[in-house]
Amino acid sequence: MAPFNLTASNTSTFILMGIPGLEAAYVWISIPFTMFYIIGLLGNVMLLYVVSKEQTLHKPMYLLLCMLVLTDIATSTAVVPKTLFIFWFNFKGITVGGCLTQIFFLSMVSVMHSAILVTMAFDRYVAICNPLRYATILSKGKIAKLGLLCLIKAVLFILPMTLLLSRLPFCANHIIPNTFCEPIALVKLSCGDITLHRTYSLVIMFVVSVLDLSLIVLSYGLIIRAVLRISSKKAHQKALNTCTTHICVMLTYYTPGLFVNLTRCFGQGIASHVHIILANLYLLISPMLNLVIYGVKSKELRDKLGKYTCRM
Image (cartoon, rainbow, N blue to C red; front, side, top):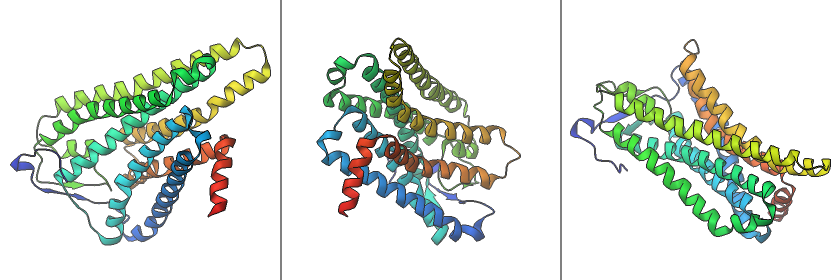
């Protein structure tokens, strides 16, 4: 399971404690976790199927949405099955290699998700500011290349961080008070110098969060400027409506993520199980919200989903 070369000192097992303090309620907690996961998974798989079958949906916006959906499915699937094993069977052990693999996968998908949101903002910019060349600038082939670039960017940023983690010596205490592995948990367990890892993590945070958000803001700044130049109010409304869906999806990703990170950094008075539940809900609810947002806002997609749902 581990694609990383581990030193002899690291050949051990970590213990994922789940949600410390709420062990007696694991069966009840697992019910909403399972429901959210299954609903999100089935809904997103259905969306992928409908887009693949309907030629009219083979547009840049929906192709990018499919990429976003794949990252949502990957994120929840990397966390929820292991979490349910902890809740149901008390299966808490995970190898160092397995832990590093989970960290690499989750972090890579997160970076890719952010990169896709930037690409979707660019898609909306081209659609509104340069509509006559939209089909040429964002053809299917170019969308595929942009998706590949998002994946390459994610791997190039996250692989060095994971390799740095794999070289850290870990103390005797191998207990992780969470349902999944995350970089900060392994850093806290390390007995070695974490300066290089901390510096690199700050670089990633700046590039992914600050730079990606800046590009999104720039795209929408140019869109607003272009819309304000249009004299027709009806055209104003139509142009802004095309951006609403992406803005909602972007807010459901960045806002809860920022809230979870802020409570982790500054919410020392908040119980640890609250932090863990918030982190898990963030990974679970976002895939469902994206599906709801596009289903409500996009009549074209909603009609196609309705058609296939009625056949079942």
